[in-house]
Image (cartoon, rainbow over all chains, first blue to last red; front, side):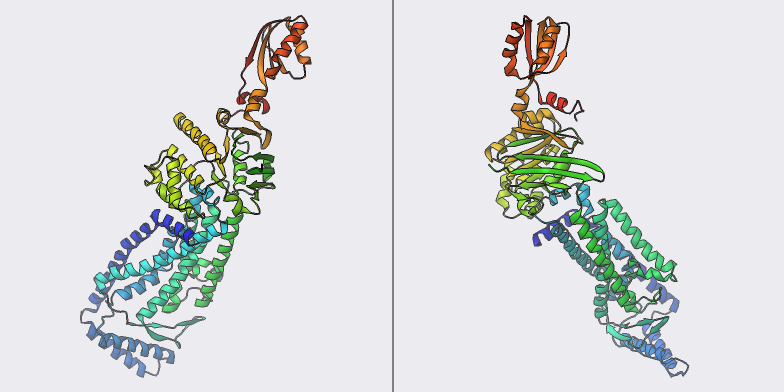
Length: 327
Length: 305
């Protein structure tokens, strides 16, 4: 089995699929970094002073005043206290929160990339994994070896899982290394707020707490990896079904992009949450961003992604091992 | 002697169409077996069933005594094949392609790879990517790939397609060498009769999904021949000839010439018979019949190629 997986990885590398992915990342990450840098510059300009310590000090005083007010609900008070703790940490450790360093960029980048950018890259990796063998005709050589068909397909799937994992790692490393040139490489210990729970239309903050940024980044990447695997698995099934690389890529791009568009266009259409590509933004649950379609939560989305993936993998294996090779 | 390849009552239906209809034949050890038929006769579908790419609707395929449907791995281990074009990964080098497929088999090491590369005479270009190869070189790499696992049976589907005359001659010599020196059985499909006639020991003729005849090539070509007779008087002679049981297709060509199908060894006998009936025999011209004639006759003049 290891030999078969090696074969598949070899083909993937020699087809320069990985090179394409790394190049895309190497071009886009500096652009995102620059965009972030411009935003930071604008903030400084608006405030009118570059002495961020003074600004932060003022913010903390403001918040402490809010806490003494009786009109503020208790939930808000807890949030405010945590925010104060966060800001005090910045002051004490001499961290400018508006220009916070490469780890923060990595965290924000993966939060933004999880819904569209990472899925597109996964599609590049997965879409022609099986269909290209049909297009080349090499499937006929591959399936006339003394190896059962399910093993051939499994080796391809394992190679896909490995390459998606490697791709996530490269994304993390590149975004850290490249953004650090501008933002500096510090900030792993920065406290980040998490533990939000969405219930109905309310954001419940009772579980909210601070975690060091490195922990938060590991969690985000884990969730983004899970999303990417689901996209990869479904893409893999499409690749088995269509036998043509262009069609396979087209179908997947359309599906991923419509998932991303629909969630913004039709948030009141509740059944949409059962569509797999609506559920890709797993990191939003971590960050406490408002959920667009009600009824969605981290366990719900994880379940949706898992169910769709399992169905896809079953279809892929059944079709691949039964189908006559006619082309 | 147990056949290397035994095909029994093989049929394939796709939708309502019967593409292969009750095909049976055997390939014996060390034999070069031709599979002859026009394009669309069901050759490729049959070959794909022989190597497990298509599941038959009914019938069975046994390779080296193993049933392909029930013991796929044991059966397919004994086969090397090229189905249609020699399809390999263009972005890998020749050697990487061979290593790739070697990893899918047991007991194929670097030495064996060198061996087959030598055998197909690709050693000079083996470390270049396949996309730089000519069709002839791809064909040879395809054969190297098929030979990797020391197969007992080599299946080649239209191996000369797209090759130039020199390439075809080279390939033919190579196939003969394989059969003689390595005692591999070879199954070759082709729509080019001449090729099969030059190369094969036995041939199965397939048309519209059915095997019309399986016989040694020498027998098929030799057993019956067209013979042209110049006779006088012709009408009496034709009457006489038509009555003979071994003569078929009596065809009048001119005022005193007639063409018949008959075994060559019966010419003397027929001559005597005609003479004894007071028919003047002016000339006897046996025409050497080719597989092509036989084929056209069997398929009722269906186009070839």
